[in-house]
Amino acid sequence: MPRWRLIALALYPVLVYVSLYLGRPELRSLCLPLLALLFLPLLPGMVGRTMLMGSALALAGLALFAPSLALWPPGVIFVGIGIWFAGTLREGRTPFIERFANLVHASNGTEAPGHARRWLKGWTLAWAIVLAAIGGVALWLAAGDRVQIWLIWVVVAAPLIMLTTLWLELLLRRRVFPEDEHPGLIRFLLDVIRIQPHHFAR
Image (cartoon, rainbow, N blue to C red; front, top):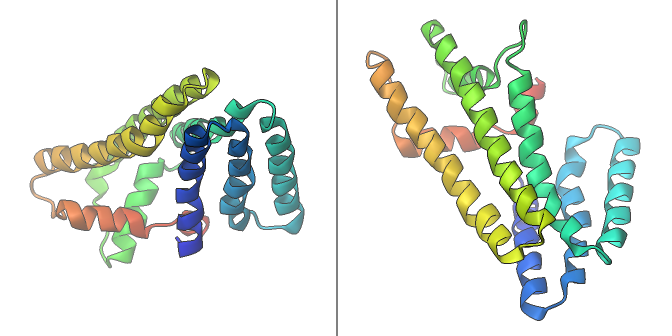
């Protein structure tokens, strides 16, 4: 991920915290155009990008009067990704985690073991549930405008839950498939970070 996008992503919770610290909830409205900038490169055409930014600016205007709206995007994104993961479990489609494993193995010059397909399908479902649950809690906190708890959940709890899920999957995989070669935790995390959304469009 480009550095400017990482900075923009980090600025989102910072802006929420600053608005809370200053007692100026309307400042949260600035978060919405900032988030739109993150997603602009993912849209192929100028029309789509214009619509996204226009929608973000319109929502930012509404968030001046309903600041809790600025807290909704992370929850919506998590739930949306969870639904997307679940959608890849349909007949005739490749489960997301299987696609991810194939990309990791391809980048390492190896092949994903064929006997792990059922395992990868099960973990696609597990990730769909985890992501939807994280998003559901974030939306519930946003709806109640519980800003402090929302910050802790989105900035601290959600990443820890995802890291724990990755670590648990690696530990269980070592037990289930002891004959396979498995990376260490750090190498595994680096492999995960290296795969970007645009790789799935190939």
